[in-house]
Length: 63
Length: 379
Image (tube, rainbow over all chains, first blue to last red; front, side, top):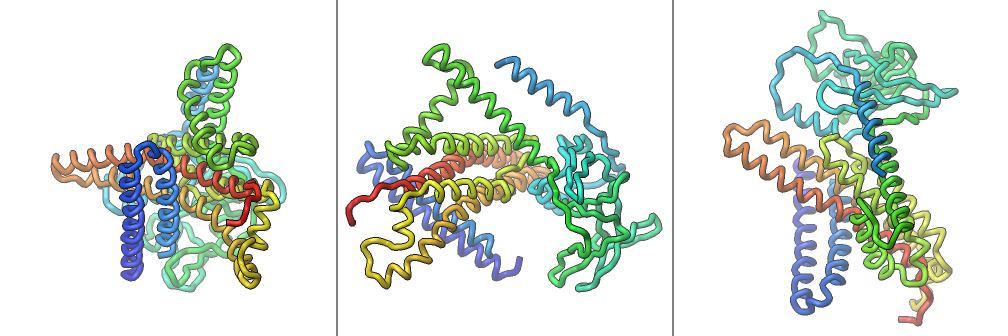
């Protein structure tokens, strides 16, 4: 592990964290507005979070 | 049902009673961070033996194809310490370390040699040579590599293979029990009561919304298999048996490959049309989109593979590092907080075990859905 690698890994984690946080926050908003659509929103949220997570892990392996 | 479980338990006890008791080293050693690091690295790798706890090892069969099938137990192998290499980009033959040699631990290496045949294991790989015929090369990046040994194909029943087979047998008995209980009445009995809602969940919340009412039945068997396999394997990884199956990229690669093949071979004309001749875009754009879409079909299963592998590996590393931290706690407060943190993350990992199985199944269903989607008007 060199310093650029560590900085890169940190940047990836910040990016992925911001992305998943945005998804989670928006899903919370959506559930508050339409509680009857909770299960559909949760499914979409988990898929989107999984996709971001996948990219994050791929980048972490590259770093 | 109960008799089958008794049979499995009997098998397990038989396996345990045939353990070999390894010689315990009498050197008094302290736990060091390097040791914990080595232990984590060791856990993430596959092994040719099944170790319940320190000193109790169960040998596993080694099967290699080397101009004919060779079969022997891994208890046949003996540890040999050898002098390593120090200079970069140089090759050196292995030499066994004698008692009088006093070299620092960094430059030495070790391999396991078979007592009765011409094989040895070097860092988990089976090689058809003994230390005298081996050349070790130290790359400039500090990695040691073996050169000049004949190729052989390794079919060994390693720890991961054994555990995968055991879990397959377990799943087989659980689900044949569930399906048999429907012959007696509409309500399943025993463990089936836990499984039935999950099967319905896969059908109603994953398969039907993503694949569609018309085609979902073709894919149900695969979706159920992949979900329960990943889930139970992930849960088994949380037990103290030290199993790490989905944290092995070969396993997740196979699962993703099956998803890829099923998607490609059951896809309809509409799916291929969207890849090679995207409707509703200008003609030059169709040529640009063709390679991107083709690449996309490979990236999708690739991301499935990486996601499962990385999640489980990361989970195991974090959990084991925290367990390792408990041993370095200097006072009771630190000990308690590390213990609490370990417990908390363990519970989180149980959730992750389910979530990863769910996401793998969900995305698989999504790809199947794209493959069988019927033609509809331009949008």
